[in-house]
Image (tube, rainbow, N blue to C red; front, side, top):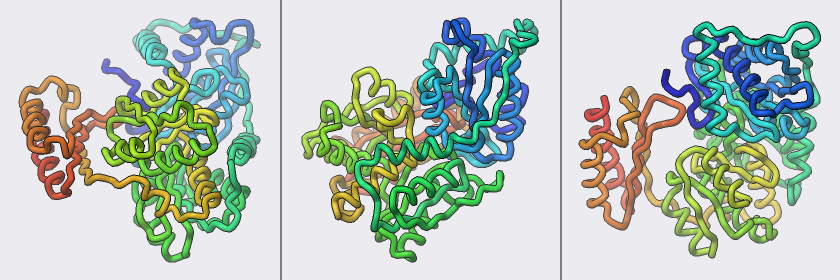
Length: 452
């Protein structure tokens, strides 16, 4: 069996790859592994379980809750809430485990399971590996040690989670949003109630898009993966800015008052300067991944800030931040982690802080984002190839070397297998967009021929 856990939990097509049986089995395995690790020692364990609005989340949630309760874990079922809300509640309620059912920005047929440890932090790789091993052992026939009688877990609906999470978001804002008009695209996802409530409580006038989830329309032509509706709405409504989330609202992308996209790199740059001004950007350092635009690195250098880069995936950004005590990190895709206030990427918090900077500074988002100039960057997703051979293909290595010689010091090439989808990402940066497209196209063709 290949590794089930990717960079962001277990994902697949719901009821095909990710079945109710798997969800139940993984939940029981997680309970047993954490018990063996001593997490539950001396008390009855407690878990927080939430989900995004996908239709498949209904039966997968039931399976997860059943698995945990059958393993002796009490469950607080918080319903449809963003991933960062489940992480926050896991910590604030003193739970031993958090579970989020979501496939984030993926299309509706997919779903996923993400586990949080005590405090709301992602599980360590070794614990995920152990959960997989225990799951596989029992899937093939080994009986579980099951509690009975009063030893089984109890299940309770917990409806206070939304208000508690929104109150937390408002409490950490450095400036109110009074006077700002903001368009929010909720991707028909998990933040459809939370995000508008938070922005209104913070003082903004709010226009919403994609805030009517029906279980089937999540990420469908809206949200952070489809910014055109937001761009149009911001201009039509004369808004100061727009904020877009993905399905589970751990991402945030933005649009300025003219309808221009403001990506994760630019958001990080804006927030870094704001945090330095408030003396909360520890070590004057930002953590980002190797996918960050070269223009981001140059902007930070010009402003006297340091950049630490990691492998792609917000879990690696978070690991670096926790190890060295850094306060800000994130990804170009819009995962932004403000470690003083969140244990994972939080799209609503990021959007609120970005808007607060606009309100506090009196400057437009366009002006604030101009701190960095994005170099032309082309990203091609090559599907239906063997992503496991990216690092070992001689043909691919030769093509990359040729491309790097052509670009010289004015650009760069990055090839990486996706951690959540069956594809290889080809990224090329160059001083000229036509050159970037040409090089990226050739490399994508080589990926298909070498790994197809």
